[in-house]
Image (cartoon, rainbow, N blue to C red):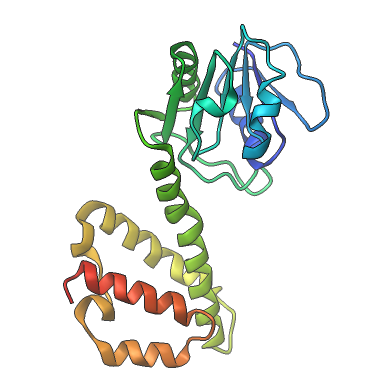
Length: 231
């Protein structure tokens, strides 16, 4: 099976390395380049460009897209489908993710689903079917981009509160962040710790007195934690 990856963004460049490493030949197609001969066309372009690009794919070939919040119908293609990995791809220059056990949303016409299952399996991913794409992508965005932004806010707060940058704040906070996520995944709300979870309003007030642009997010999350913990 030869895969044409249409789009040279972070995901496309990453898959151009990961697929061949998994034994699947792949060609990366950049903007403006003609479509090569391939068995499968995996579109990793911006969402708005999907219909236009899919229209260039022959109707007897499988075409997949990787838009997390959209279904296969956006392709307007008889053999259209979806293969969206539940993972962040910063680009091969920064690092390639380990896809073993990672969820992958699969949807579309049955021939497209069958191919998507093969590709997902080759990359070590676990297929997830019959899921609302918007809910899927919203959850993914919260866990990925939102948590990353919150982490960087925490790094900025710690950096403002000390005179040295060694060791880096990110290195200090990362073990705590990872352990908190692991515990939350295993035990739910019972694993949440901190002043909001125990109703310590005095400490929360101290924190807010030190925060700058982060205070609005802190207040919203403080409220959410208290709701989850029944405070």
